[in-house]
Image (tube, rainbow, N blue to C red; front, side):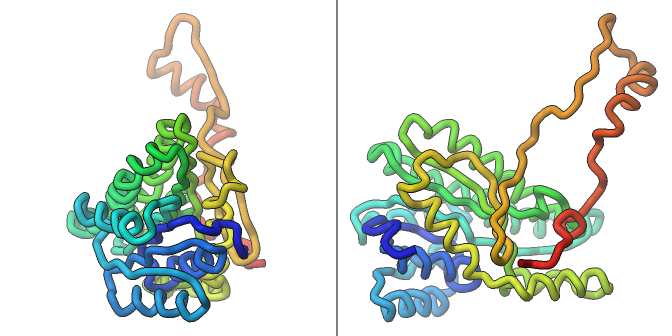
Length: 295
């Protein structure tokens, strides 16, 4: 990764540990100057010290992504310290897992505020700088919990699918300024995923697989996506799982039926649905679709 983002300035949110730490360290090792954002001052500073000890350049920032003004401060910290902003990595996250019919409004809002609103606020704060310099790269963390599905994560899944739509819209709206926006669905064992339930044999097996996947494995793809080498890569959804990199499909029509005289509810039941039913997606969860062992 050495030198691929030499001289660029990057913001990594939620970078005090886990995936964010790995990304911040990876970007710094590749030549970027990094704002290490985390609501824990101790964790953020620990990562900054690690980067500096390795010869890199970084500063700590403890502003929350979940508010417009505080998110602006995160981006402004990069501009004030490094003179510019080139890369935004929206990684900050939280979990408030609960079955849908038991989820509280607070549990819903807390997750949406950090993941979806946070990604918007930080991205929006960087947009004027990206537009003016006619360059920039966004990398957003999504999840297979949204892309495929999972139990007890309606808040998290909705936020992560919202991020996919946000990323696509940014890519479309800012392509004229040569700004790119991509998503990564990371598989890794971190302090956040350690709260995933592990009560049933199936859940325990899933957690054992997750524990094999190192958080630092996500960094190489992020570094690439932030570099000029990825100038033609935008609006994509990737996933990293140990030593695998996957490209995800995106929704497109898979089957079409028409009725010349128009549809009635009865005709839908008798003709349309039977014609399309073989193309229906099963009600599956992420570990059932991506069920092979990490490589």
